[in-house]
Length: 539
Image (cartoon, rainbow, N blue to C red; front, top):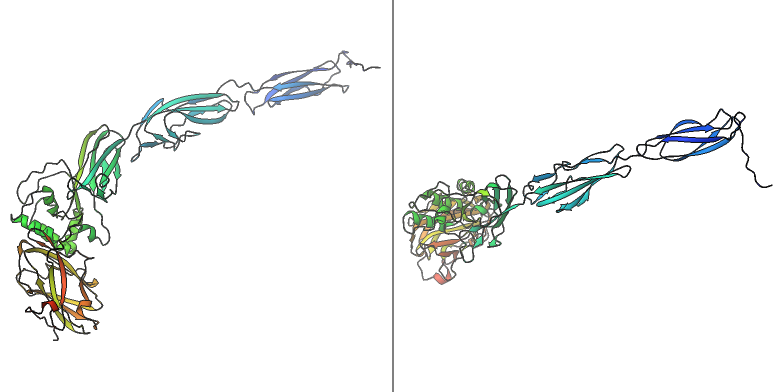
């Protein structure tokens, strides 16, 4: 026989066992719906009927009657989330300033992230750049994102667990940076090749702050150039500062400062050679008193001798002063400086601005030799300091008489004597000539004597001329370690201080130390002279 279909009849109804279902779909993924299973026909009671919680998906239920007859029913639980997630962007249009010292805005924290919500849960939140320049261009949070100056439109998109999406947009306006440029021009570097002041800092203060530097040395336009950035409009002040204190600290303070500056100032004060450049007068105001006096010349001389008090004065005046180039500086008299600004004030900065230049003035550099240094004329006769050479004997005390040669129309000199303190022990300076008005404490610096350095500086307003071989001062030493000639133990040290002399018109001359032959007590080429022989204390 072929296959037959047998209807299993229930004992009471005679009907075949059948199962049916009704269900409630889930509201969200991961949330149960429910299935209600019913049975008819067959023989009751039934197993497998009732209401059951059920995860989304397709499920098969089996119903069994009292005669162990079974039937099945399939139930599909769907997710019925029809509500998209909600998303709220920051204020639709925001305006911000760039960060200090930068032309960009970096988002601090999550203030520009959206507020999102969903009845089922959030799968992802992501932004993208519709317009503008933002880094990174996409991401889950704007915290730390960098916006360039300009207008930027950001779109946020939120996706919930069922794939429903929502978006919002907002615009962030980053105010453009305002550029302020200029040069620090060394007042000694005049046209057509002006020189910039290097190693200076320039500060901007106002609604925003910035700084630039150290400036580059060299010729304009690269030398002395600075650029400042303002992040909003308003009133600003520009302040240049140069106060470089490199070890040894006096090197920077004495940059371009020598005995010629003291002489130039002294000549101005007595009316012999008036300083017609107001910036040179400002350089001569060493103590920043707004007046010129012999005290300023004394500060220069004492600073060259490394007097700590004089160096402190130069340091406290910041070593360099800066004046806006267009500043009008009227002449009052020989001694009084007019008031002047050392900053630039911009009352209303609304856009980029250039040409904010300053003249840089080195305090003490009255004759403007800070950069580049003036070199002595090689064809001019040098100022020579003569001293008799001798063989040094341990334990001996020696007096060294220094006389001059080629001292013609000189108004200033400076040099540093160097000796080995392990060989010679310095004892004193004694003035033995009255023609120059030398003073042991005022013209000789013993501040580095323990290092074997004795500095000498002299300046007057009018040039003086002395006869050759005229003695001027005497140095006393004790010989600690003999066996060599004096010329091997004593020298002028150009590395410590430029040995230079100046005429009354500030023409530089070399300074040399000449040792007279210790046997003949004079150089071979000078034996026709009438030498003055200095004797040792034990001779």
